[in-house]
Length: 221
Image (cartoon, rainbow, N blue to C red; front, side, top):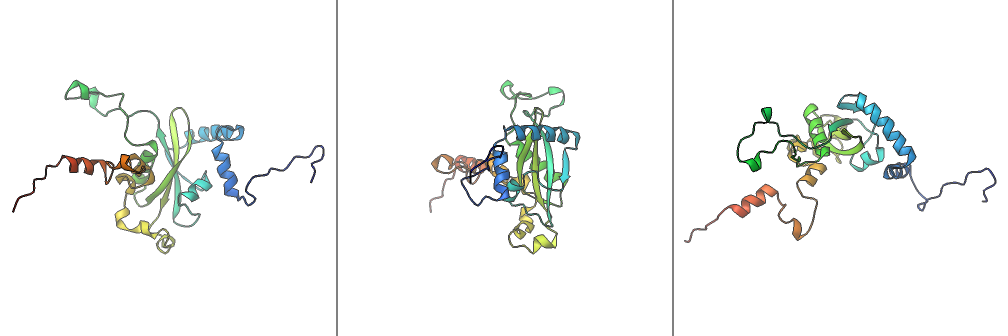
């Protein structure tokens, strides 16, 4: 079909069977586009006026949430968490530290975990009856970063009867976000890489250090 004068040419994409989520994910891939920059600025202003942890009726990024395990059904909830950006100051009263000068730093220390894992931790502590499934970035400005955390109510019948998610109801998954068992936590523990360069990361850095520094003298019998 030829496009006449004054008509807008239709948008074509390589994939003929593109669903709605594909378009949404493409929008989020181009965060510097005029549309997304305007949207993010307006949303960021709105987020600043609200509490640091607030429940949402629906996800800001439905495509991302679904990829990370969210389902629009009973038992799933989403909370937005605000985390302050910047380094971590050592919590010492009046800056009084002890020890040798090389270990007396207070201000220019860097936290070992990501802001996303901090957001998961704060949501998990505040909502102790829910289990943290996953999380994702939604916005940031010069002072804060905003993440949406997917939580699951494992006491709900819809969750307990769903074989795809009822594994989370097992007691061993209580507060998995505090033990580095979520996706963000595993990344910070160095468990995302493969190959010989990462053999010191498993099963954990502490366990590897203990194994390498324990003198084992087997008794001769």
